[in-house]
Length: 168
Image 1 (cartoon, rainbow, N blue to C red):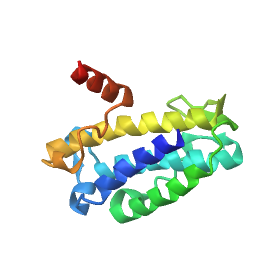
Image 2 (image 1 turned 90 degrees about the horizontal axis):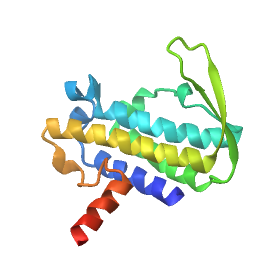
Image 3 (image 1 turned 120 degrees about the vertical axis):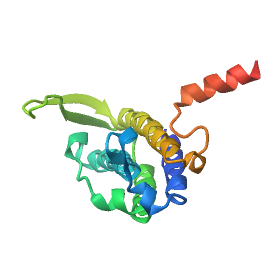
Image 4 (image 1 turned 90 degrees about the vertical axis):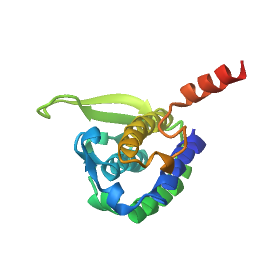
């Protein structure tokens, strides 16, 4: 699982190495008024919270820092990915953790669920792919679809299905 997470982050890093800052920070209607950079920040902060939460024993994706440097500077986002890859290597997927989340609009009810680092790593991967699909839509609208490959933002099960279908 750790290798899959690192591959996922490297796919994002590939995009960061070729996208111009003006497109990285451009807010578009198809992204509900947000930017590619904001979606990448969102992805990376979930991974960051997983790594830091593995040390404290509690993971809360609600407590993101929303570091604007990640969403405004592709090079800083690349540096964040490099740190994350090192951090992911330290994870013990069998480690038990508490997942903390507030699923109310007014912020009035924290819930705690027993989980594991491995389960949360799987969640971060799926969450990332979901946002990558949204990013890809934004890139298409901006005329930048060639910046990613055909599997960017596509679930691994869909890739396998497509490959099996083509093999038949």
